[in-house]
Image (tube, rainbow, N blue to C red):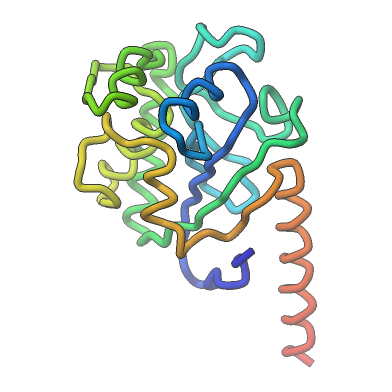
Length: 202
């Protein structure tokens, strides 16, 4: 729990890694032998504006693509025991602006994008299988970061797995625990920051 290390005048983007209990997620963890199966990219510490490639409808894993995610709805909302880690990535104002521009392109063309099922199987076996307008979650997040000048990895986006983000960002982890308890944790932190600011002002 390192959220107090966030600098007030520093711009951040946030990476969420989750361990859901869906059948596809279980299969991913079975093959990777890693604790996380999904990666999301958020623009705020409360994870209110968060994007990824995932299922569009809660009960249909085969209708998947670019989505705006909500940690209180869908797969995240129905399971209160999802384990997660949140990482704060410091970026420049210019990098943050480019991330927004990249996401705007995905948002405006969301109907063109589909889930990279073939690429997902490929990455599990160390094969980079890329296709226009097709991404899996960690490939998408890595792609957006790279396009924005945020280079976390030397390998191609199509070879990035969720746990790769932990290995690169473990020193920047700000939360580890149940996803359902994350916003309450952030709220407590914000209240402490406010009270501390009031004391200093006096």
